[in-house]
Image 1 (tube, rainbow, N blue to C red):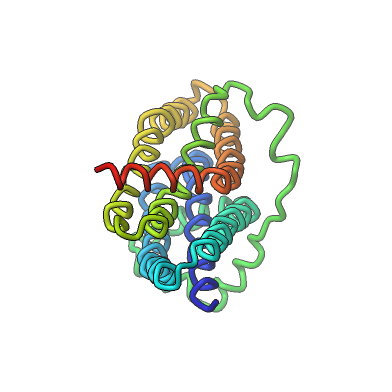
Image 2 (image 1 turned 60 degrees about the horizontal axis):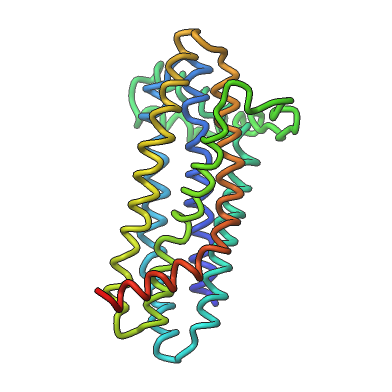
Length: 265
């Protein structure tokens, strides 16, 4: 149980960080420093990557125990709880996004003045800075969505992000569960997770990210209104949330498909 709780917390952190990352370009637009915003956020992404490295062996141990005890159903239940934690992490990211946008914008300007990550880090740790950070908390408002978030934003972004998130969320889990279904091929099945995540990554890098970058550049050059960047962040965030819910439906079919492919290779 302790292992499951730890995995759920780590997965929640990963998805919260990934959700907040969607707003980085919006922050960059607000303070007219898009490149600096992206560069600074890469430091925060290390938190997500570290959490991913920590949770991977713990999930693998859960699979080993399930195979040894011949208990695939409890493993599936645990995996569904992990997927639920990804949804909760995404919700946390949505709730903290207005605060993140407000705080991260100030950090970018502060970094520009300090000129050093270390000096910025020690400046943040000062008691006065920590106390002032509480003033940056922003309560999310439904008014931020506006009347039409799809204004000037193609709806294809929503559906691409939805399915990409769904498959990315269960890429590793479905492969590991397939290994529990066909334990004699579990190594082969686990390697197939890279294909699922790879397809999701390629779809994002080809169909979503470049187009979002173009919209951001156009807003920066004042060819289109800045609210378009805010709208696309909201669209992608909502799609991401629904995508983690879709993952609950995808995990078993994907696991069965991976298991079938593993036995045929």
